[in-house]
Length: 242
Ligand code: CTP
Ligand code: MG
Image 1 (cartoon, rainbow, N blue to C red):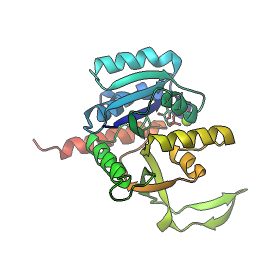
Image 2 (tube, protein in one colour):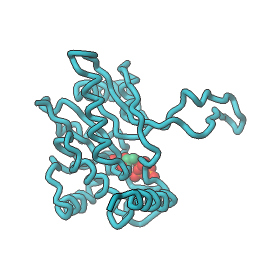
Image 3 (spheres, rainbow, N blue to C red):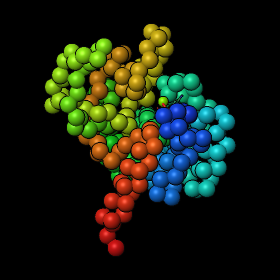
Image 4 (cartoon, helix red, strand yellow):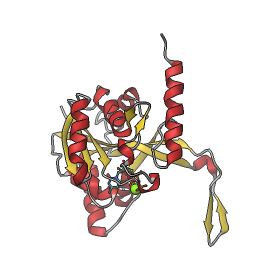
């Protein structure tokens, strides 16, 4: 059975949050951002193991967090790189052929639910099923853009894009491991830097499909997102059956 391994990049420095402490260790609803993210992966039935990329000086802190939460699925916490892409490269070094599938998910995206992760893995496997599609198809989570998006340069509007074709892209993003490795190797030799993992696959000529996500799957980026996160948790709490 080929494993499904989650790579969680958490080696950023959270500059846009502007806090002393790295944003992944800030609390939302009484739990750290990274802790909440890791718990969703721990609880997802179809995720086998987790590799976290952390800053060298925060590896101990991540290990302590994993211990505190009793996480069983952590394979290792690796030292990340300068850019997010470099952190993924470091994490990929700790995977091997038995790992058929890789899911990449930002450590700073804590509101993904374990059942959403399971649904995502099912869809990824279905797309690559040798019996039906037999494809080399990668999958990204995305939501339709709510805003009108214009292309602007030098302060002047150049084009209004057709909103029906525009999506805001999130994580998780899922790949056959062989596809992701080749895409990352190709990016390294061609000096390509992408803003997400799928863009490396696209650059390599691979096929990427979209899995509809939710607007709650926000990335904690600026201080406003902490307030938004609290509201998401409150709403979820209010919806719980008692
Ligand atoms: N990340 C990483 N390695 C890096 C940079 C980012 O693993 N060298 C991770 C972050 O920790 C985060 C995710 O990639 O979980 C998405 O990045 P982003 O939201 O940009 O986080 P930061 O880079 O930490 O924030 P900022 O850009 O504001 O400094
Ligand atoms: Mg960043």
